[in-house]
Length: 432
Image (tube, rainbow, N blue to C red; front, side):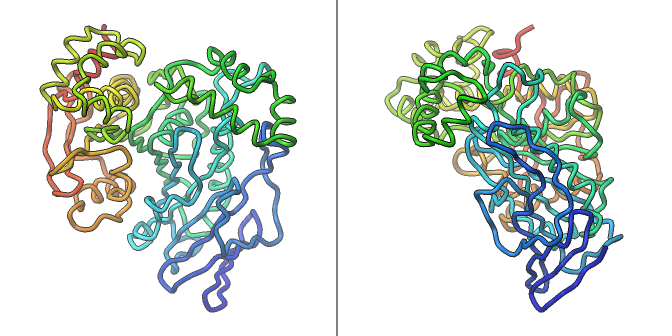
């Protein structure tokens, strides 16, 4: 094991092979490293063997791979903390090169960052009759990536016993799923889940609509043939399928139960105004139709408690954006509330706000990863402290402590505490 350098090229010898990346003298990047073998788009991936030489000097976004960013001075036995980041994108989009979570600031702060790519859309999240319960190829891809990190990251200067798994949106959902006791294999020590999002209906309940949209049987053999022979038809069929389920994510794991997760420190976060920018909600609210549409769609979007009580609470927050709030609460904030109440280990909850205007979905990624400047220093410090194993300085999220949430300004560097600000979503989506 070891490092070799040739001007701007750096080669690391590790159990996976000799991997060559590029350095600017301060930061070293290893792009698009294969971590699995995928026999076919709808086949289970398997562990990759040792490859003699891996050219990781350029980014290949179309591959299922991982990328690593390290301080140039990192060496084996440096024992630096490791962040493994799983991107979001509705289980439809995204790659292992999310620039909003670039690892350069982490490297300057002595942290190694790994970006995990995984299969999305139907190759990653369609389910077939012979699949194991609660398994998804996209999530199992990430499991193999985490195992690759365990075997190899020490050669890059990382500590395999000090890994923080971080996910945002669909990536946060994947991270939480990997923390389930039936999935967890000890590959990470703590978890940050930013705005997780679960579909409200299982793939099995939607399988008939996919069959109708594709005009084909939903089998591994049928979809494989379609992907190979008529990829445009598969793409158009999927687009019809996702339109049918336009009030929700079309794909992804369902049946979330926080009590099934392993006991580990977790930081859960959301933005206050998650999906204000969604065009359909903007249109409804701009025309003053918010109250009527909330009443019309609340049940379909998962509200089980009194709709009028939810509407009143939403008006008190922002009477002009009632539909926008329902979309964000149904997609993200309800899951933060539920996970905070159910997970067995120590959990802290933070909410991000903006000084002027709404705090939107994804707005927290760059501040957390140190790409937003001094105005978000408190957000950045929260991330750094947690990755280094330091507990947040506010009370754990628990009924006995009043469900305390720390409020962070994304651009004003403000920090405050609120008691039970997610009550409205808990009472609406998970009434007792």
